Amino acid sequence: MDAVEQARREEFLRREKASAAAYDEMVAVVGRVAQASALVEAQLRQLMQTLLDSKCAKLVAAGDLIDTCTALLKVNREIGEEQRVEGLALLGGLKDVVNVRNNLVHGLIAVSGAGLHDLEVVRPVVETVAIVSKRRKPEAFVTVTMADAEGAIEELHRRADGLLRWAATYLPGPLHRDQVTF
Image (cartoon, rainbow, N blue to C red; front, top):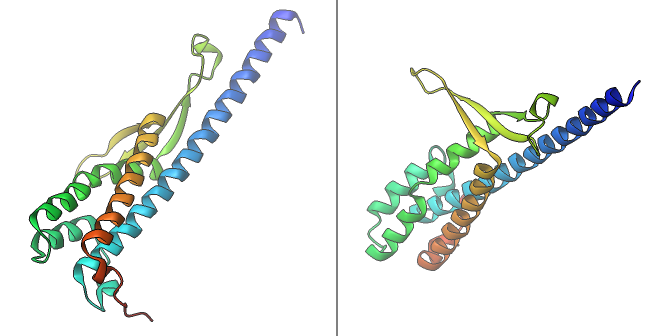
């Protein structure tokens, strides 16, 4: 093997290694998004139970948590207008963040810029490409970058912390109410 061929092979192996590392990094980020999303869901479920303020709330806390919590927050007469606005702000736009999570978790991780044809690319570009299919609408391809994923993680953690603090501050009694369990 001559020196040029050896150099091409080494470059190819270096790029393959960089591509694999970038892929592994995105897999780890997808896992972190899933965990942050699970935290938000747990806080939403707790918020819903607290807003219902019933022994049976845990049984009812199923379905679309964001819409249900929003509806309950809007009609709860025991919450002041200032607290209602604060709570609704925590819930507002949350579906958009959850959609980023869904696209990451259900999408395919793609790596580009790792081949020899992309010699000007310093680092591989890793994205998740999701096929989004809504009922009776044509499917669409959605790309989620590493930066989008990191932003979703931060936003999910911020919302989860905010929901817990809000419920503990404004609804401490219902938050600690005994629940029916099986």
